[in-house]
Structure formats: structure tokens, C-alpha cells
Length: 249
Ligand code: SAH
Image (cartoon, rainbow, N blue to C red; front, top):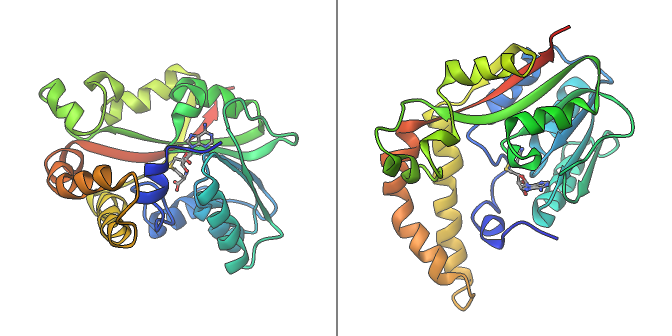
């Protein structure tokens, strides 16, 4: 079981597979006022940077589930590197339908809401693992500027304009699901650069190291077109944030 191999190639050097930076991840951890010993569940935990750094900085206990074998391995190595291997567990597997045995104080899905079939389904899934008074974290894109055409939305790698909302509407949508938005940390364009531009050097080096791989043509095409596509579309039109939610009583 694994995610499509192209992501394991282009994001192999990423510690964070989203436009949030290490600084903003730290800001988020502080903003949540995490108490030592809090259990945190992370569906689509990637290379584990959020759980590992929060275990180091806030003494939380973490469980991450991720479908990428490579990212899950990297997460375990990162835990050892940061000296938190006894506080965090990374499970390689499909997080769809995953509910923790013990309830958690924070239940997160940061940039992988397809796991629950969209934002609403993922909030519902995470709520099943949440203790009373707990916080749900959702990382999700929104439109910084509304694309003027469907072509522009596709240029952002969305299927349609309707895939995402503007920020006020996204915040309102959490209310419609019955949740208060109690915090948020938003990415910016520099953060997008760290996520997207970091793929380019990785692709270039991968091409040099793997000239006979079956994905050479695809990676070559991406490296050629991505900088311009990214600057014209994603960087201009797409916002991204992590939203902290608590159920309304
Ligand atoms: N939250 C992490 C990773 C976000 S990228 C971070 O911010 O760094 C999206 C992640 O979802 C990838 O790591 C990918 O491997 C994982 N993923 C995709 N489908 C999944 C599934 N069905 N179950 C678990 N993880 C999945």
C-alpha cells in the first residue's frame, strides 16, 4: 500500500508537505496552548514534523497515520533525531475510517482532507477520536483571489472553482458543521515557495541520479513547466491555513 510514487519522488526531501513553515508550525503549537501529556492524533501525518516538534516543545504524545511508506519511515527517523521516539508512534496505513482507541485532546488532518471524503467528512471522522473539550485541526486550501475562470482553477491543480471557498466562506462553513473556529494559522506566499519550489531541486537531482527510471519523462515535464505554472496560478490564487475547531455545545 502506498501513495502514487511521483509524490514520494518530488517530496522526498520535504519535512513538511504543505505550505506551512517550521516557524508557523511552532506558532500553531503555541497558539493551541497544548498541555504536557495531551494526546494528538494526526491523519495523513506525512514525515511527522508536527507531532515530533510538538512532542519536543510541548511534551505531547502523538500518533500519526500515513499511507506513504517513505514518509512514515522518515517520520520515525525524525522522532529519533529529536529524541521523542518514546512519545510518538507512526503507523503506515490508510487513515480512512481511522478512529483512535483512546480519545485525544487534538485530532488533526493537515492537508489531506480527501481522507474523509472532504472537509465535512474529515471533521466527522476526527470527532470520533476527540475527547470532551478537545480541538480538531483541519489544514485546507482556500481561494486568496477567486479564479476568474475554470481554466485558472485548473492551473492551480484544482478540478474546479467549486473545489475551494474564499476564506470567510470557509470559516463560515465550519460554523455550519456545528463548530466554533477557535484559532487559525494561515500560510503565506513564502510558505508556498518552501513547499513548491523545494520540489524543483529535488526533481532536478532525482533526474540526474535516475536517468533510466520509468518516471523520467513525467518528472522532466514537471520540472520544465512547474515554476511558471506555480507563479502564474497557485502562488497568486491559492491560500492555505490550519483551522482549530471546537464543537458548539
Ligand atoms: N500533514 C502532513 C502531510 C500532508 S501531505 C504535513 O503537513 O506535512 C498529505 C499526506 O497524506 C501525505 O503524507 C500522504 O502520504 C498522505 N495520505 C494520502 N492519502 C492517505 C490516506 N488514505 N491515508 C493516510 N495518509 C494518506
